[in-house]
Image (tube, rainbow, N blue to C red; front, top):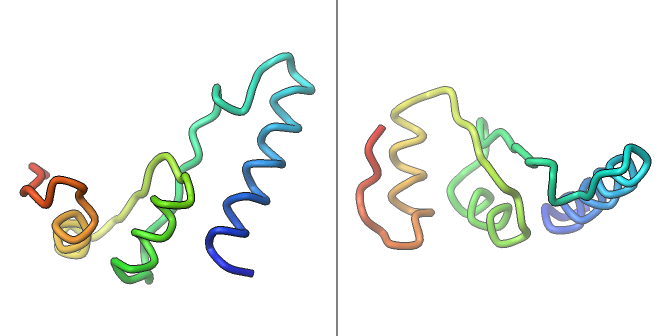
Length: 77
């Protein structure tokens, strides 16, 4: 299953669970971990609609931010 397919599947599960509690999927933040994934995979996840990406290594996060940032500007850490 591709990243896009995985995110769509997870979003559907989130929507279903949210509806069961009187909420909407828009009320839920989908957070992904970028650990062990390259910048291309992170870009694919962002394009597929993930809300937030987390990375526990500052050096890797900094590199990915430079590549994945829409403005291509440096982002403070």
